[in-house]
Image (cartoon, rainbow, N blue to C red; front, side, top):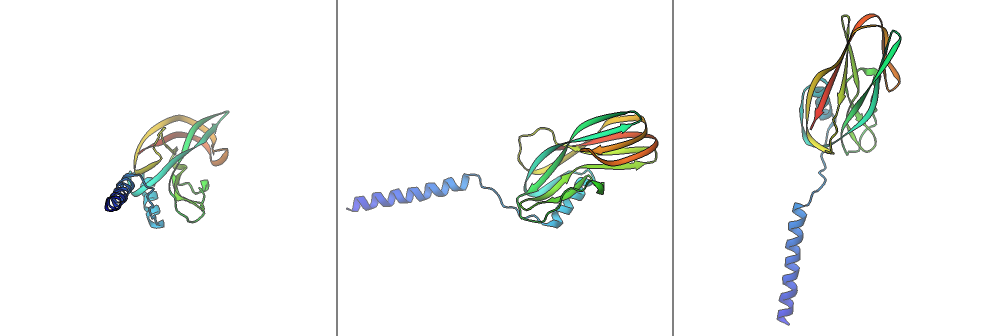
Length: 189
């Protein structure tokens, strides 16, 4: 009888030790508390073209969009992406507002909060600078750092009387002769 009790206790102790060991090495979804103040800080860094290190793991994904520039008698389109960096937190509802002319904005729905990219247009003298964000194909779904590199994607020397559309929505128009510069910010993780 004593041998049976010792055997049962040994199996029970080995099971508890095995469970404790396996549960400590198995991946767990981290619950990161993100505040609205942190979102604004991240947004401001990305808005200024700087890289950021996140205080916890975030999710990242991209959404395909189009940017169309029409001038004189022709139009051309560029396939671009909006990048969403988010945390699974219940929060507020705030969609991307294209008319605000911000490259990055605070975003939220019922189950996530984060920052989302779009298009920013600046007129500097006779030059129109269009800024977009791109996330190259990646298998990563979660990140803790965002590295930003930027380069000039396209330059149109002369464009007269034109319009710029983001996903079919008119976001900017001009009259007269302008130089168009498209700058793309590449996001790597």
